[in-house]
Amino acid sequence: MSAGGPALPVPPGLVEAFRAWEQALAAGDTDALARLTAPGASTLRGDADGLLVGHDAIAPALGHEPARRVVQTHVQVTDPDHALVVAVTELARGGRGQQSQLWARTPEGWRLTAAHVSTPAPALDTRVWRVVGDPLVPGAPAGPLVGETVAVKDVFAVAGQKVGAGNPAWEAAAPVERADATVVDTLVEAGAAIAGIARTDEFAWSLGGTNHHYGTPPNPRAPRRVPGGSSNGPASAVSLGHATIGLGTDTAGSTRVPAAYQGITGFRPTHGTVPMHGVMALAPSFDTAGWMTRSPALARDVGEVLLPPDVAVGGADLVVVPELLAAAEPDVRAAVETWVADQGLVVREGWPLGELASWVRAFGTWQAWEAWSVRGGWLADRLDTLGPDVRTRFRHAASVEKADADAAYDVVQSARQRLRELLGDRVLVLPTASSVAPFPGPGVQAVRDATLRLTCLAPLLGAPAVSLPLATRDGLPCGVSLLAAPGRDRALLDLAVTLG
Image 1: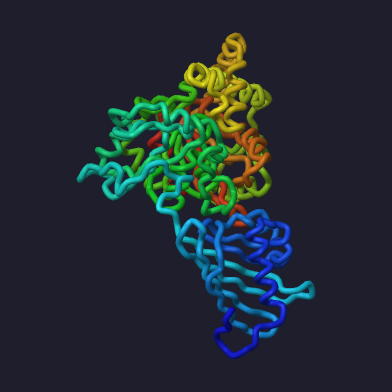
Image 2 (image 1 turned 60 degrees about the vertical axis):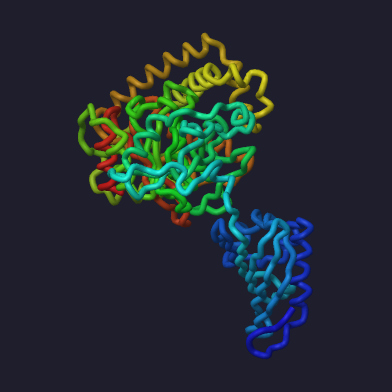
């Protein structure tokens, strides 16, 4: 360890603390790493996934760096109680990285108060992408989307590629596609280039974005938290700047939830308005092809290419339902309330939502029935190829009786009619998701269940919905959704540009 800068001696105990850190890192001793990290809310740790602030936020991320050895270390002592340690590291997988650490002497010994870790970026982040090109498919030389790049969710057919559906066993057996999905072809003809095929949760049945086989794509706006799914790969690609358009599907919120979790715009069209030819189905009664962008304006530009003319008219009056606001956690609710206050006159109206719980159950039952109807033939003796969360959903789907599915379908139709009467020609404002992005773990399922109470309204209505980015007081991304009557897609995107 060499000293740089002013000729101040290396303080006693610093070298030993640094070595203890490296030994704990090599041993995966997260308790020791947490002890060597300074307590309090001002401790910092940054890497390629983002900046974490405060010991409590940092502790869960400790110990997840790739295997490495230190090959050079330099110390710059600022005073007897503070020193900057910069180390060059050599990774076991190849390549060199660096880490910069600010150490401070405390009554308990030397503690790390700030750190930045850099490692060589992988040539292909397989958490985000399955296939990439430069580009994978060039766009037409002229068109309204020239210069835009698309991350295609791995449920859309791209000529010359397989549809992997987020599951290795399915991908291995899948044929090479002979033609593009209609929506992919339309984007290419409009000048957009296909950057690559991005990851999805298995068979597009999730809202969390934690693929069991390929890992969790990063959420750059909320480091270490889930990215949202099932359009997780396209959402992360857009948020990371790898693509300008994320092409996804939205059955129960799979474009809107990732958009809210990552601070981007997400759109779900009226059911049936965007062709689904060449798109793997999950639950055809609710499936739509949607998209995510970093601005409402680009979302509208994509809509100008993909959407037919509106077939319904209505106003831009906004309505807020307190019962739906109450479905969100306080920090998200406060962010939506602040946004609503900035819009001027917004009608607050109580809706008779005593049947909402039964509507959510019916939605889930009919979705499960359809999912097993379209995938059960292949999955019946392959459930063990699925990750635990998706396996649980398909196992339940296999148990749904036809009589229960028929009863659920009747409830869905009744809910659709009632919601259309309540909404009329207005625009409903509601939280996109019940919370900010959770950390991976057992709590994701509870967040999913709470969020479905909000996201299922659009598919129950068969209606368009757009999620606009907001932030909580803590700076974490969340979303506010605008939901209009079916057939008002273009008008809704125009309103999103105005209000976003």
